[in-house]
Amino acid sequence: MSVHKKEIKRITTHVLQAMKARGEKIAMLTGYDYSMARILDAAGIDIILVGDSASNVMAGHETTLPITLDQMIYHASSVIRAVKRALVVVDLPFGHYQGNSKVALESTIRIMKEAGAHAVKLEGGSEIAESVKRILSAGVPVMGHLGLIPQSIYKFGTYTVRAKEEEEAKKLIEDALLLEELGCFAIVLEKIPAELTKEVSSRLTIPTIGIGGGQHADGQVLVTHDMLGITKDFKPRFLRRYLELFETIQNAIGDYITDVKAGDFPNEDEQY
Ligand code: KIV
Image (cartoon, rainbow, N blue to C red):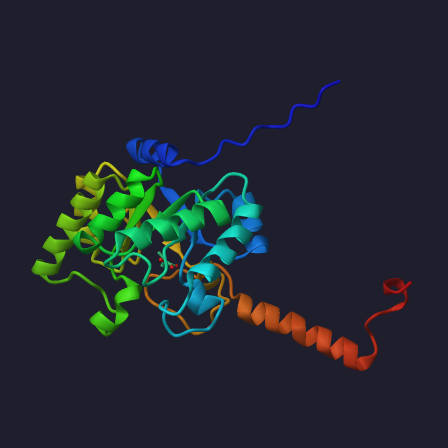
């Protein structure tokens, strides 16, 4: 008797395009390690972003700037080993595409070869067009990222809402149209007014993925550690926390410490 395993339909950039066309929202979360990526994939997430937010969440840096290409490849390869269905997108780290499209392509090729990633994400619009073009010409799907772009935090000075003024909003729309024209398969819109997300999403045929961009984006992304309440004090308005895991884990570890100190762990059933 042959046993037929149920085949898993992988999420591709084409599947995402079809989702936008039929009005089905796209769910994306960040992932940086094997164990969490297994859970994300098993839960049915469409896209896992190996974000350079690993610099904050995993390494404790204040910004996303310090993370290296080798570190991104380490995180991405751990995620890829866990994933059967989701599309895995990897951030190109700061310094690997701004102003040098050759470096951008070389870094992308390392991410694709060494980690086995499915796509890369770059922050910015017209300023990085050459890098986007060159990566796309090598057959690698590119996700754009506009609005609040954390790799430029020292230019902005704060993490407040972007593109509230007409001039910046106009540039963002032009950049979004350019990224679509160049061939990007999706664009993250971070921390911009909901009405601007609505306009951009209606003018593009590729999906927009919002984070702090309101309900009109074609999909949503959050940092997993934020929505699970592992990062304790980060509570921006756009963040919905589905769990308060910091306290839950802290309490479990407190119970373990108490049991060890009291000689209650291990008991007779927990030894050989
Ligand atoms: O690095 C990251 O986590 C991101 C998301 C916030 C979109 O770029």
